[in-house]
Length: 119
Image 1 (spheres, rainbow, N blue to C red):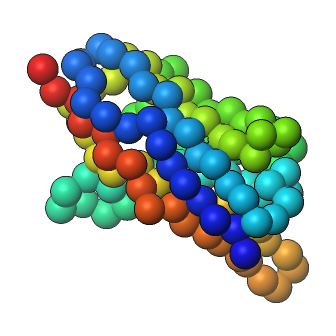
Image 2 (tube, one colour):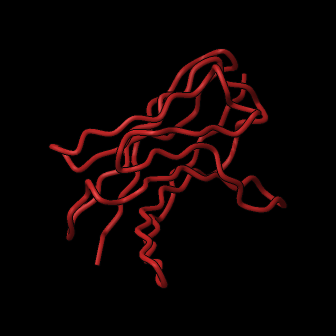
């Protein structure tokens, strides 16, 4: 079992920055792929970025060049640095820890943190 807690959300003006944190406990953090997802009102949840256990990263086209995902395995924490924020980035942001084997997948979600980009 893995417990996930996100933090760092808030209200920011367009063009501003926020850093989200995803703290995990209860298992070996380093083996998990960590993904950040977001869900805006009336829309489906979408992948924003993920980072694998080896440090490989992938980003949604809408955030490339503006967001950066990272992890600190010693602190059991992953981060999402969000720069040049736009109103369309407004959403609840969720962190997911995922571990897959040959025929199984374990995934754990946090409760989400609200990000609002508005002037």
